Amino acid sequence: MPSVERAAVVVHSRKDVSVALGRVRAVAERSGVELLFDGEGGNPDIAIVLGGDGTMLRGLARFLENGVPVLGVNFGRVGFLTAIKGDEVEAGLARVFDGEYRIVELPTLELELDGQRHVAVNDTVVTSAELGRLIELQYAIGGEDLGVQPCDGLICATPQGSTAYNLSNGGPVLVWGLDALVVTFVAPHTLHARPLVVGRGVDIVVENRSPDVPAAVLIDGDPVANLALGEGATVRLAPEHSRLAILPEQTFFTRYGQVFGPGEDGR
Image 1 (cartoon, helix red, strand yellow):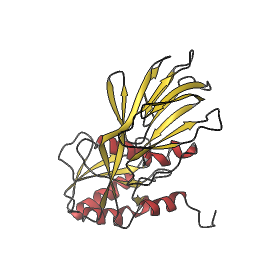
Image 2: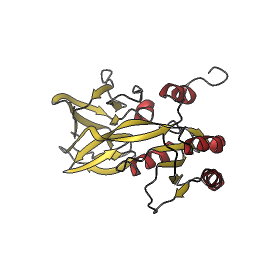
Image 3: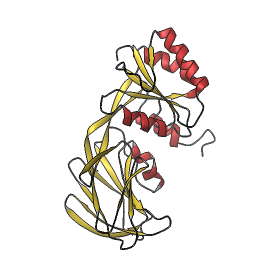
Image 4: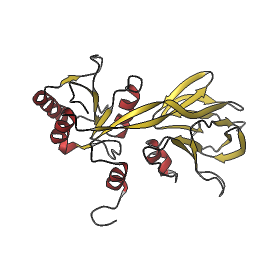
């Protein structure tokens, strides 16, 4: 990639990363890179995120429209989407500012609801709006009705989102590069509801069939609406792609092994 001239900076909203930010400023000064912060324009070549996967999602969503690649320095807990460890910020960013990075194109989700369109980077979830209450969801995939499923909710996740809420509910991990989404139920009250991997051009329609429990619809963890009895939403792969920047030697499988693989003691 070309060397970086301007880099936007996105920081963790709840964690103090001021020390790390000072280290980023020092690297940028040595590399001749202009740093841009919230509210500043300047058409950045890349966005640098100081945080974990939640901050990465915010950065990927923020720069989705203008196609700026987003690279993460991990100051969170898991940091699966990040490329550089927090204690390696100087060496890692020096390489990035010199153009030593590559870009992975990742699909996003489109949610149609009440005539409005929303885009999710990670996942879209339909769940009970009342904590602890069972919900009944009717769902159809590709125009074929698959019945009503009592459950705690339904997740539609992108490949990058498949290692989050989807994974914790037993859904499969989708490798970066797949143009697909995964549909996974949360605590289904049956032994027969299994996760499904769905390709581009296929709609997932979810309708609330619970007479006395509203369904909450969430985009990347943020609530956007409630569904009353008979109301529904449609989810599909969106035309937009988020752009994740990583170091040249990194692959999905190296990140997967580092984050989800056995520790040094083999467990």
